[in-house]
Image (cartoon, rainbow, N blue to C red; front, side, top):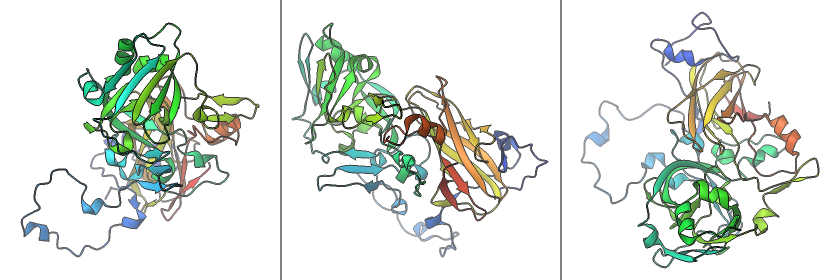
Length: 425
């Protein structure tokens, strides 16, 4: 357990108990953690000095590793399967993970017509339209091109959209904000392939299309694709999982998830956007001014406290570690401020290395909770100076007709019993 700290040990720089990175410097300090309500530790019937697994030979080798059966509850939460084919989502359990990399098997999903079972030997990527030489690539041929690797988040444009509701939703972090994940993506820079095709001078847009039964397609500015997009073949060191886009996925760093088209089959180079369903009926939002937001590609800076968070419980006054994630489609996270008094005062959290552009950044902050009611908040600032907005500011600017790009500051209330709930504060 953590040793008790008094007001004389350290002057608080933020309210709701002592909240300061300098707590880490106190000699002998051990941090407690919030625990899942459903898996709180109880009496153990196994003698720890003579456990049964030390009395027999262990299991055999396996051809592919799987998680421990004791971690069977760390899974994607599936919702919205509106058809047998699988039109819906599954959320990443952010509150159950550490570090910045999401395991491939827990990466969030958004499918419009199920997961296609693609034979890579028969799959083709075509580049055509306003090019000097239309090209067709097999997966095998793409594997021979020079590749790059980048750690990048992908976030669905509709992630966290329950935040637009009048009343705060009560769910674990992942079941509310879990349509975002972060992986190491490896593939061929798209600029190489486009250069090989030869882009006409009048070209300015590219229509990217997937090989799922719904033939999902989106219009993307050519300039962005030439700048930093890639055709990915690997995720976290292995070939991309089927639900994540096998065998080819377009990766568009920092932009809303629908632009990173899965099962990529076609890139049509043109001089105008196609104005399809995903640019008109969807991803276009009416503002209070009467104007509409359109082609809002970039995912703005955002942060979440993953622990303590709803679904977890704090057991008495103690020194806890506040943990969370921050990310921005604009670049690197510059800082994350944390408050324990609902935003009346703030303290700067520690950013865990590495801090990379368009990638999850893990932040940490020691908190000497005094056992009294508190409201926890985090606020991200990215390297461009963009600051994550308060909810009331975002709603005033965007109105209540929105659905996409919700990135307001999130607030967790902690009561005297250590119960944690989502509040608007």
